[in-house]
Length: 120
Image 1 (tube, rainbow, N blue to C red):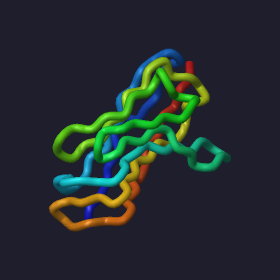
Image 2 (cartoon, rainbow, N blue to C red):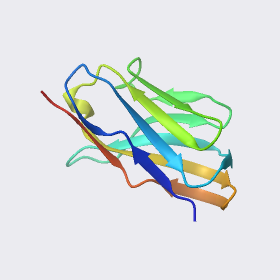
Image 3 (cartoon, rainbow, N blue to C red):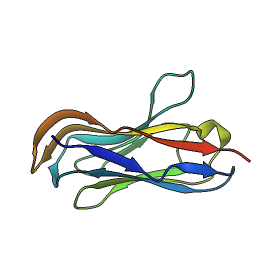
Image 4 (cartoon, rainbow, N blue to C red):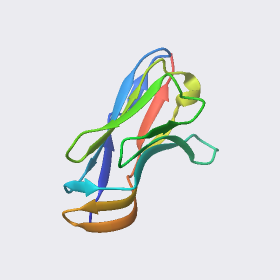
């Protein structure tokens, strides 16, 4: 069973930066879409950014110009977050749709989440 493991969360001051990573437990051969979602306390989970298997990206309006999604050629998805605001505070989750790995093919996989807190 493939797993997605997020890391890189933590406490940062407003205006600061963080880079989140999402590592798959196997080697990624392909996928439909991978993305980052977040869920703030008392709110529903929302889309932050996605990247297709062909490299097309999409961002929520609230993070455009501040966040960048990318991936390497092996098994890791990234989210570079700059100019962080208190309203970016949330648990950030990694997601993969139609993930093809050396461990098998999966319709949808979620990570366990990593907490980002933006506060002075």
